[in-house]
Structures are given as C-alpha cells and as structure tokens.
Image (tube, rainbow, N blue to C red; front, side):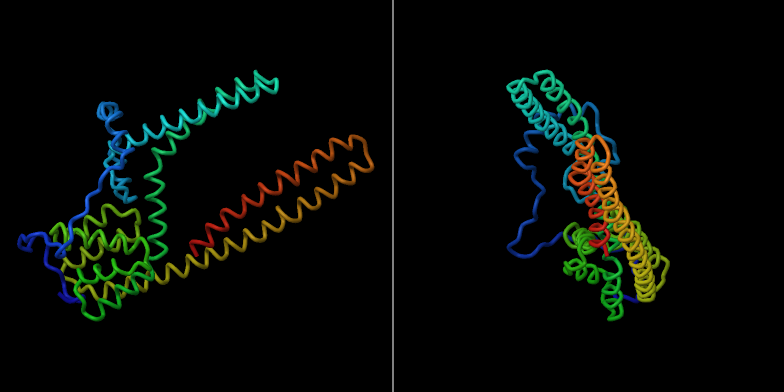
Length: 319
C-alpha cells in the first residue's frame, strides 16, 4: 500500500499468525526480586483498595511495564524501606546530639524527620508515573518536527504506512518518537493487530497531544478515503512552523532570564554587600553585620544562582 493511497478500514484484514524472527524468543516483562517481594507482602493490601484507573493509564504512557496494583505494591514496599532508613537516621541523630549535650533537639529531629518525610516519599512515588509520562510527552514534542520530515520523505517515496512506522522505530535519533513508533510496529508485527487499530491504540496511550492528533489524523484520513501523502506533507510543514515558534519563544525566555540574572544575582548582592560592609565599619553592631555578610555570601548568592541555573539548563536542553 503506497503512502499516498487510502488504507483499508479496520477489521478487513484476515486473521494471521504471529511471527517472530527465526531463533528469537518473545521477551516478557518480569518482576525484579524486590517487586516480587513487594507483591507477596502487600498484595492483600492493594487488592482491598484497588488503585485509581488513571494510574494504569499513566503507567502505559510512561512505558512502565507494571500493572497499577503491582506498582502500588512496589510503592508501599519502597515507602516502608525508606521509613526504616529515616527512623535509623533519626535514632543516629538523637544519639549524636545526646552525646554533645542536646538531647531535646535530638528527640525533636529524630521524630520530625521520619514523620514528615515518609508521607512526602509516598506522595512522590505515587506521582512518579504521571510525571514521567509528562516528561515523555515533552520529549516527543521536541522531536516530532524532525520525525515528521522523515515520515513525509518516506511517504513521498510511496512507502507503505506500516513500513514507514517500522523504519521510524529504527531511527533512534528521534528519541521517544521512535519509541512510540516501535510500540505501533510491535502491535502490527508481533501481536497481529491491523495498522489502523495499532494507530488508534498508539493515540490512546501516548502522553503527547501533538502525536495523538497526528495518529488520529492518519486514521481519519485513511478511513475517509483521503490521501496520506498530502496529509504527511501538511503535518510536516505545520510541525516545522510550530517548532520555529517554540524555539523563538525559548530564546526570548532565556534572554529574559539572562537579564534578570545579571540584575538579581550579580548587581543586587554586590551593592548589598558594599552597603552592609560600610554600615559595619561606620556603625555599631559590627559582628551582626558580619554575620549578615556571611549569610549573603554563603546562602543567598548560591541559592539564587541555583534558582536561575536549573530552569536555564532545562530550557537549553529542550532547545
């Protein structure tokens, strides 16, 4: 089937056997020893209160090969292990502070650390699949423009749609887009699913709205009798324009960050240090002013620099 020819409707292909390469075996997603232990220990707890169905969706979008109940059992096990570690750290802190004559502070720290951090760890582990899925979505959006150029070039050569996604899956330079194409190819070649159903499934489990709209557009164009080649060319131009606008926006944002960095992190602390140093020389309370200077140089400046470096690094990596 050529890239500019309409696809047959879903369900018209005859049933066929699943084939793999000679000498190879299908891989299975096996649990690690820790995950098996977690499932044995927390299975009843998880089954009594099944996790939210959205967790399974987030796991699929994040490409974490676990069921929702298996993942929650792992979360509970990791939280218990972390809590034990925090309790041990609290006890060690108490013993140390007790030796130096601060038992009350040791009791406070030893109790607050595990009590406060354990719920935070549980919350972070429960939200990990959703955050990972969002990160994958951003990576897909960053590579989708270049991937669409590859798809449109293959379509212009009248390559079959299933072969286009197979070749796209082999191009690891496209990152998570190639991973999404690999899952579509897996459905068609290993599971025996027709290409339209595989595209629909791919659209339902992808974390990227742009990739989802592209796959749904392919299915709609094919089932309505349209030509795929003009559609691929149009989407390639659209994603290229969107990519240029996104790059322009990021450059402007980075320029704004740079100007703010010079003002807030360089000029303001410099003037503040000079003013406080003058007050310390000509006024009373010199030791207090020196303490403030230490706080500015040792805490304020490093923290403000980190506060600018982290988002700048994130913008630069996405550019």
